[in-house]
Image (cartoon, rainbow, N blue to C red):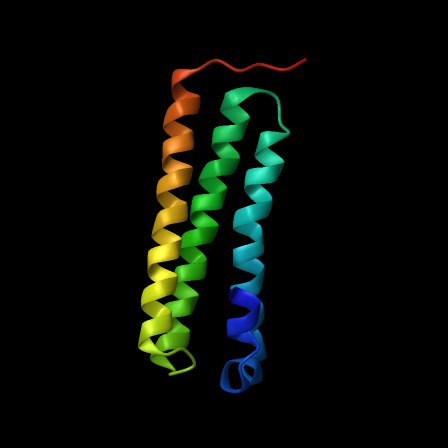
Length: 105
């Protein structure tokens, strides 16, 4: 969804903001993957926390785009809900990992 959003005419012309939104959204996903392949829960949780930070950064930049009227209100509401859903899922995974003791060799 982010790629389609930042490809819109007005948004695309603000290259810096569009690039920041794309990078932070990709970072959220990449940190989950990277953390999964680390040794044990402690490191995975650390990367999940990085992912949450990237989600917050993405949402913050989307609010800036909304303020600049690059994003319609309905789109912003959808993005806010989607971001909140992903954040809750990451939080739930962090809670689960705190309660287990996965270690790899």
